[in-house]
Amino acid sequence: MAEVKILMKGYAKEIEGEEFASSTITLIQDNNLNIIVDPGMNRKGLLDSLAKEGLKSEDINFIIVTHTHLDHSLLAGIFGNAKILDNNNVYSFDGKITEHDSIVPNTEIQIIKTPGHDQFHCSVLINTKNRGKVIIAGDVFWWTDDEEQKLDRQSLLEHKDPYVKDEKVLRKSREKILKIADYIIPGHGEGFKLNK
Image (cartoon, rainbow, N blue to C red; front, side, top):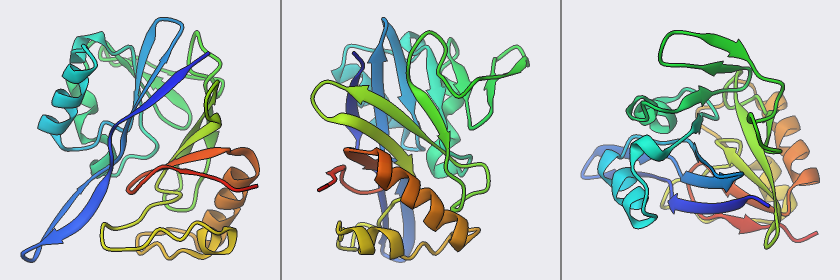
């Protein structure tokens, strides 16, 4: 069964009038494959986190980007041996683009479409032994560092997203995730267990 580990908690904050952001970086290990979801844009933090796991960039087989906002995807190119997956396609560094069938190749890890924050947004569903159904939600759910993470269902559905592309569609994506997940890893903020 797949193992999921948060390598680096995502952040979104302002320091002395300047904005700093990088997504939560998650490592999935399944069938002897190393998969990174949202490599973010904090290069040192990412490489240090991989080193703590005994991994280098060349050890990563797949990168999944939940969406192409640079705070989630900027560092995808440092993984030269990996294939990059988004909501529809698999990209190779030789320029080849193929479609996937909503499953990470050679795994049972699902990629589910969750538009709203971005029209091409996706989330990742992993069945785990310890946490049940884990969804890496990207920016379907996210908080700035100075916001309280209110985790009751209504607050999760209504949380304001200043970068939302379509609020109605985002709410539907949130409803979808809340029906499926036992544990959610947001794009920025702490992972949390759902009380069902």
